[in-house]
Length: 399
Image 1: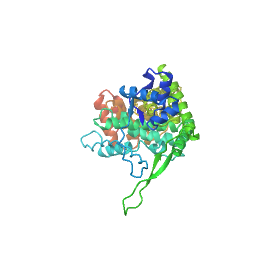
Image 2: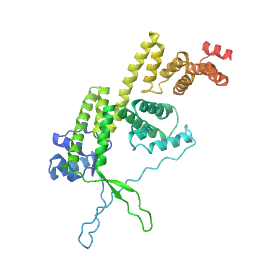
Image 3: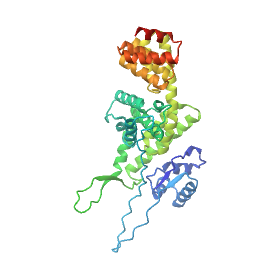
Image 4: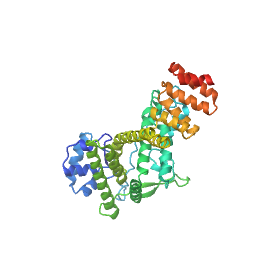
């Protein structure tokens, strides 16, 4: 079962059209013999390409177990089960890190769920609407965004958080687009139709064990086989469009095409990897556009609309300190929502703890809420960070 190497970028290889088509069919599930049927190439041509790509590190081939001896009655021996790669050990809880033991456990637990369906990753029902998906994404992004852990010593949890957040973003992007979501459901439905349940043998006296899915050999001439070939070909077309957009730095277009490539071929690891690379640039563009729109609304004194736009911008960059600070002041002074104002002000302070202005605003919000001890603490910190902050000094005196 050949599969692409994790760091393989097919767009950087000099390939003939036939080689490019063959490489696009390699997904870790299609056997060497079936590749020949799917592509129309001879077995020798497929073998030559695979040998060359294996030497170059482009393709990896699973090591097979030695064949079992034939039974004495002459019947063919059943194929040995595939060898499973040993699971990487999870890091131990480290009380010396700058995150609590509970946060470390949450990160480990979430990482263990990354291969589940997208709606389970976001913690929403399978039929959740766009609004529920956005709420779930915003809540998770606040908890797992890498910027939340900026300047903290978190050891082996740093790459884990980045991996978790990339998957959260991927789930949100693909489920919040109705067209993409429908295609994902079709792809998963076709994939489910390509599996059978196989009973796991039980020892004598044990209860029957759970049945697990097993992929059947798929004929490219069956209706399902033709459908899968067509969907993978569509995915390849979207991927090529995305790479053309990347070359011209059209990040929003590239992200849209990659979403569709994943939707039509969810098992292709390359599509997921390139999406993870391109998507942050698209989010940055969306954030900057919304910030300009919010500033324009603010300058025209439409403060309620400005708050709405700032909150929308924070979906794409939830730990931007200045955006959180302005959103906190607007939520406090315009919407009179002290709970929301405190949340934004706390996040601004967390993102940039050396900014006196942010602590002053948080202290004023605490003061408005009647939390005098908390207000005094934050205002004193603001004055210590900026002894010239007259507004913080005045608020502190009033306490």
